[in-house]
Amino acid sequence: MRADHPLAREPLSIERYARVAHLSTMPYSSGRRHPIDVGLARAGIERRIVTTIPYFGLVPQVLLQSDLIFTAPRRAASRSITRRCCRSR
Image 1 (spheres, rainbow, N blue to C red):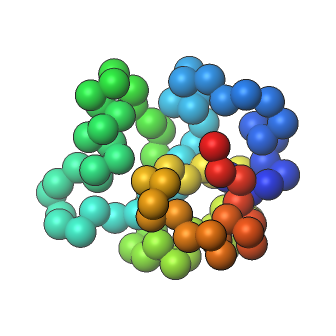
Image 2: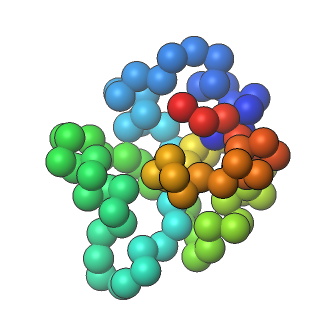
């Protein structure tokens, strides 16, 4: 999420995380679930994806112009992206 996102001001509960509008990148193979969603499903969580984009590199621009949030594995999140626009949790 962008640093000034309304949800950035307070702790993010699992319930709020699931309710908020999410941005997602397309999985590498069509017809397969995104690995993030597979992991969340194991924990009984389903996110509400409202926008899907084809490239990870577009994430910062979309987040800066919206109230969407984006979930990525910690090691996949680039420090340059985090410094430019986003808040990591």
